Length: 323
Image (cartoon, rainbow, N blue to C red; front, side):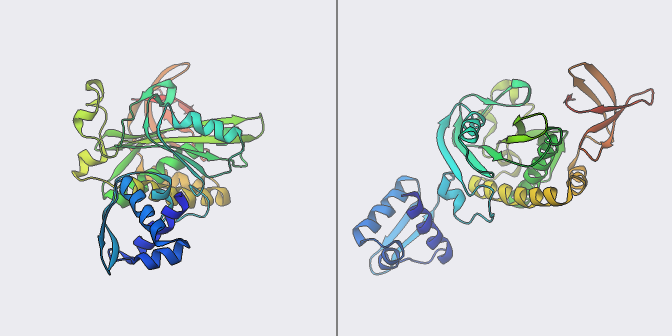
């Protein structure tokens, strides 16, 4: 059924607001006129507002702001990333499902999306607030031929892809806080969580989770998050198409991922630095071994943060909470 929906939505997209006759749809789908009506009704049940006029046909007047498989697949400009997609109304966490699918052998580039997460997770096992119908909650399965030590670079790459996509779709100017937060006006709108299953010398698979606050209003956030978090809608003052933003992230990610696999981390590093709000500032880096205060000098070619303390000593920060 989803493939029929996808074909039908692609036909509507190509006509851009023109009418599509029942006969055209029947010919394209290889079905009866009665079946055409059922397919149209199915789209209406999904929230598509479709006008039907005798002797003219059908056209879409309004689309739901949803992230179902066919919303993403229709018009997706990638060759691999996101082409295999699993959508769920409500899950505990897309990361958990992505791990299960990866263990069953789902291919490189597989996407898991949910409309709502009940126990979404951020770094250091913090919970991530993921209410229904408002954000993008997704996890990507990757199977790169990399050493486990190289995988943090893909967190930085993902942050660049998300920042580029937000800029393209909303016109807002995001910044990246090392290593995994995308901010707008200094408030967090995106978190990225990378987890891997690996041997000592090779990655079996990698799961990159991305949570984006898209269309929440202030009242949607719990009181304790309101001074820290924001949404794209709150800053831009307009409703953002979630499916379009997902498509743009996947497109940008695929291009950066190909560049990375062909040329290494250096071109990604330059892009990341152009969005960074961390470099050149004095920060506290809370690591497993204690807190280091100093100036963020830059990234190494491996993606490790260089911090210079007040005595002029340089520290390599592989993983930390930055404030």
